[in-house]
Amino acid sequence: MTINDCRLIEFPRFLDARGNLSFAENFKQVPFEIKRIYWLYDVPGGIARGGHAEINNEELIIALSGAFEILVDDGKKQRAFSLNRSYYGLYIPKGLWREIKEFSTNAVALEFGSIPYDVNDYVRNYNDFLEFCKIAQDNAQEGKQIASAPTAEGPIVLRSVFDCTILELDKHHSDRRGNLTVVENGKTLPFDVRRTYYLYDVPGGESRGAHAHRELEQLIVAVSGSFTVTLDDGHCKRSFFLNRPYQGLYVKPGMWRTLEDFSSGAVCMVLASDVYKVSDYIRTYDEFIQFRKDYE
Image (tube, rainbow, N blue to C red):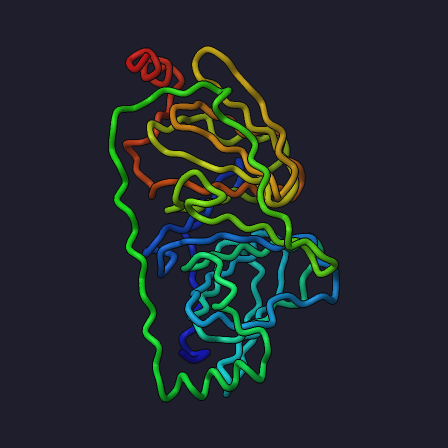
């Protein structure tokens, strides 16, 4: 691969007076199956991150908040990409050197990976990377795509708000160069991510959500700022205040949810277990109550 194979991808953007929403789904906006998701935050000024290549991992990088620059190198040429819009992402093929720098204040970099973490996939020394490029020219390596597991279908099992919980996410990578949180399908997450969407530019006093899902599982993360999520199972309500990018609220199916009390600059990221399906949404509270009664 060369830097010419890198490209900016524009995501759908739904403009709303209550705040904007963008999303990315496997094999649609994201040109691979998401196996790993990680985000960088609290990066001090003047610090660079990355400085490595990955042999088999493809990446898609998004500036969820703030701005930064990504320098991509294929061993012959370099190219810099500036990311400062949350509805654009940079696709980086496998086998390219990348470095992220020029982080603005409160910048958050969201990254999707095509394979689970593998320490042997990393090339961390630039001279080793140049040697890798020479070998790759003569012996092109074929990537192996992992087939997605079929989604099991079964009877709907109703849960209560007390089955929903805050998950403490990985933060072992924190250091003076900024913090990194990672989630992986089947490991740190109780489901496989097939869609990611995020809310941003939410005006003060506005609320979002006000719907339920029949089968969708979600992890809701305040990657920047804070907000409150109120869950309702038709009998009880429970509110969760989210203000840490290394914590996520795991929401079971069949919960009415409302998001409110957004702080200035808040960004809400949602990892979802399936692609968008209009039939999975319950849009009115009366319909939600009837749904709960039908399966109780």
